[in-house]
Length: 511
Figure (cartoon, rainbow, N blue to C red):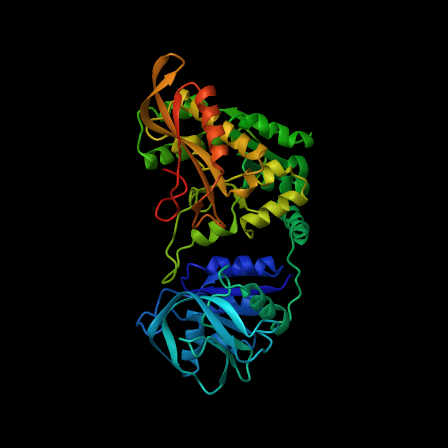
């Protein structure tokens, strides 16, 4: 079994970033709520613990605190921001509201280049985000670094392997934050980097074969990265025991079914069941304009169609899903810290009386790790690097009522935008790009005649994980070319606009 690091979540917006940075160092880690029981903690058997930040103050009555057993495990602990204050308070120090709150860029002066801060300069750029500060440091701790406003920017216990930082090493703004985490994991915890895509694939294949045996597994295949990598991994493990079902909702990307067939043409004995249910979905969406109602109708209809097809197979015992680790984290309701952000369709949408056993081979992975696994499994880059696509499909990119004509218009416009991004080397430089069809008509001129057709918006964003995003600064000449092609080649659109909104305050999708 690989080395394991436990991250205790106290509600910080950066908790997932800690995990992603640790994974990038080829060390396996998991995020668990601070409420994890002592029994589960002992069972997890971590080699080290990291205490995350938190929006809470250590001095509040309802301050989130972990089980006291963490301090008796005898393993290294790193406290970050709130985690630092928690550690100090546990050892009898005092934390009070700062005379001057620190948010944003700061510079630390390193006093002691011990193992945690080894190979760093005397002055380092870091990212602060705190309104409380240590006013009295316990005698059992020593100061490693300071700032103008924080005399205790980094500290270490004099006898135990406990370390703490007032700043956030996990964010990109802390210039050498990854080096600090590396020092903690490699030098202090003495971990060996053994978490790689290759080892994940090998261990997953063993686990899948052991779990499935000679039974059959059905999988909802969508053409997206997650379900495609899930299919490739399951096929590597169990071959034709895998029974993929592709439900064409009529709301998919341009030629999606054909592209799925092309992708899996290298798997000759993989029998994918293609179901054309577009008419069914479009009929149920007639007259519906509310986006949340659209989602519920599409989700419910998908389950009905999928269940009907799945019931035609015999000896099926498992349902496979492309659930990822962020889905697991975000769908878990924590008492105290991070509130449930969303009820993900993979994690929170299954019926209570489901007869099939669930198998989720990617549930330990972040998106970038899934892409790496897909590459090692031999999937083409065009699939592995594909942008995210909403579960309800184009229905939530058509503002207002959805019908077959609007879907066709949007598919063609979106295909032009995406193909141009790919041909100009811009596709992999954006996190997500797509076209939105607006319920707006505008006067135009087509040839010698006036027209009165629809408007579409181009949307392209840059992001790390989709939690925040800024609009992509695509070249003006490129946008002009795309707009001209759409207006000239897509009948029904006479005007194209570009969305300059960032998240927040906007979201990436329009609905």
